[in-house]
Length: 152
Length: 152
DNA sequence: TGTAATTCCGACAGAATCGGTCGTATACTA
DNA sequence: TAGTATACGACCGATTCTGTCGGAATTACA
Ligand code: SF4
Ligand code: SF4
Image 1: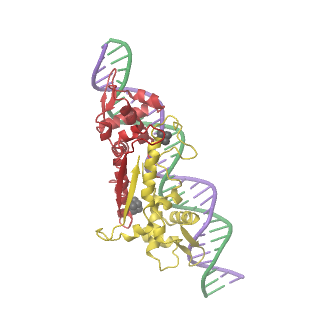
Image 2: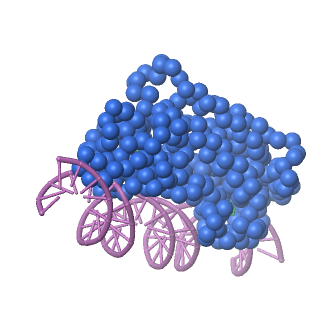
Image 3: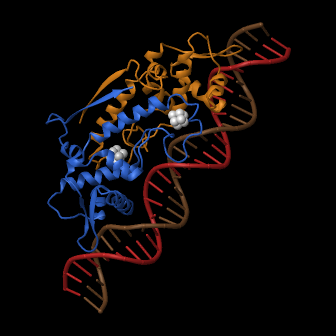
């Protein structure tokens, strides 16, 4: 139910971690996994996905690892989710293959498609940088403020 | 992955259908199920859930069925989802029971909680009425417009 | 009073998705 | 050449989701 997968969750954590260590050339999957207690092999696969989608740059071999492919503020949460979990749809229709078979009779897929766009917009408006900035427990620091318009 | 369950989907369809038939006193689960091709017994259980949460009023026996408990514009998509799928959380933490065990080390749950609130806000701003109004294929009719604010 | 329609409820099974592991191949560095 | 790290695919157990079944309680109506 409208829930992020843990893989996406882990991916966001990892990217944030990388964003917080800009000085290092590259961090290995294991480094990041250990920092949070994420299963290392699983995170490795996630980082590979992110690399394949151009969000990270990887380097094999000793002292290898991963680094952000662009500035943290140019990577949106939407991209991360999309890279890890595939196309973003809140409904089962529009899902390319295997759409729900009552698509023809369904009368709410249109409005839901707009809801989908709205939520996607929210996700697109959030950058890794935004996640990293808010260490501050009390959020009294400069606040990123996005305005999302919903037109049904 | 950030996807509506089919139950919630069906629930929304059913409520919309009820909203479109205000003249009838009550419609049986089977009536609605047949109208769209939804498995009848499954829809029955869904409608029962919605009843238990006060979104519908039910009446057993012959000529019984379900009717909206309030005006269609007073019922939000959020309530429907909440009634059917339970508490709304995009993350696995904050989920009361069985939270993800790396909640302590996790540094993104705070920002994600705000994203959660934002999306919940989007859902709350959508009423059954909104869904029902937009039969019009080309959405050039009066548009419902909500503004959702995202503050990370 | 009896019967049909209908809600109500719990249990359950099959399917799909998800989380995580393993094994191996490949690439890079020293 | 040895060691470190990514790359990739197969696989499996756990969980969640979808849908079905069976039966009990309610109500209308003949
Ligand atoms: S078609 Fe209607 S029911 Fe089927 S998935 Fe899309 S929205 Fe949900
Ligand atoms: S704690 Fe962090 S990792 Fe665990 S669910 Fe919440 S957000 Fe995801």
